Amino acid sequence: QTLAEGVSTAMGAFPADLIEAKQIPSEQVKPLVEEIMKNLPPEYDLEKLEEKGYLFFRDAKELSEVRLVVEEGKHRMVRRILANSGFPVIGLKRERLGVIQLDDLKAGSYRELSKKELEWAESL
Image (cartoon, rainbow, N blue to C red):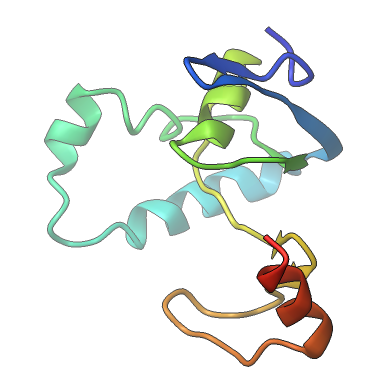
């Protein structure tokens, strides 16, 4: 499948539009993987994660950063779309939700919506 085909579910097909894909320079791959591994929560059982294939990226020689737009991104949809296109996902970062730009908003925090953002949210 391709990104344009998206993921088919009982609720329909969910496509994605590719905005940007860039290769991470090879000299940055190992430090990035080490950083990811270092920041895994201490309660994670690395042996079980390895056994289940969740640490597939551990020996990666190449990584890419991909930006895409999806109309609906729930139920692990972005992970499925990329995996179906041959690109397993290590991490995700949501940049915006509709007209609401998240910028550097930390996980679990919030900010006041602008008038335009609030009008958009209320129109849903």
